[in-house]
Length: 179
Image 1: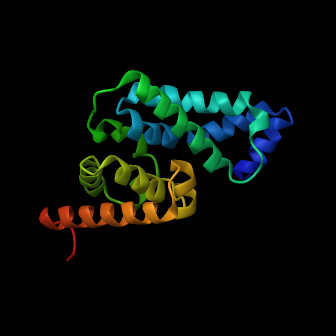
Image 2: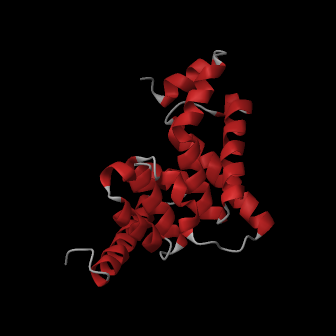
């Protein structure tokens, strides 16, 4: 299997199929990420597609490094700009439920636990939700999350700690977690 960077390099050399493979890899997860900013599934889908359009059109702006981090940075910036224009009313996080069913969480958690966790994620502060989404649904490192969200690592660490602590407390209250 090719790395993201290899696929993008192939795309830069003229292989259009390579960008399709990257889209297959990231579109649903990127949509979920954009949703954490926009709170509208339709807008999130548009921003995820726009991020790939930027990747395809602005070939010269990638200077190597992690393709995933670059893609998420583009999506973040587009989503923030769009949010400022729309001033969207918040929608519950579980509207995006169907996006992750086919992902890693369906493998690792039973459906009931996944639903409970998603509902609890929706109760977290926005920054905590974004950090935990990137750390655990996207398997990014703390450094990668910090770069993707434009934060320092200490802030990412603090947000992850507080978010996990709240989730743990809520799960214990619901009788699903361990003390």
